[in-house]
Image (cartoon, rainbow, N blue to C red; front, side, top):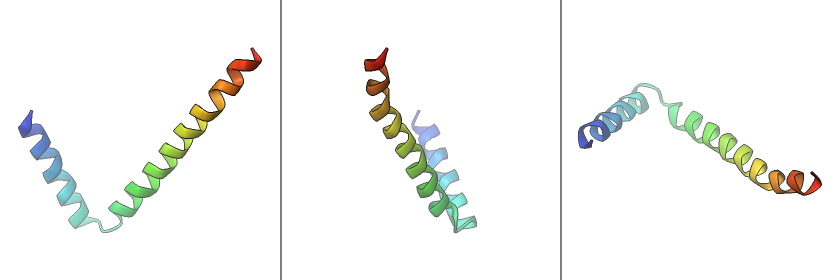
Amino acid sequence: MIGIVIWAILIIFIVICACPGFITALIVNSAIVLSVYGLILWIAPKIKKRF
């Protein structure tokens, strides 16, 4: 299990060093996903009340 985590950290480190825009893309994609998830959590109870 620890080996998998170490490999994941190593791969992310290599990608960050090779592609400087990776962190920006990661932050933007994470923000979009979290905002859509929050929007769904906010709208779902309102839809359930109608039906």
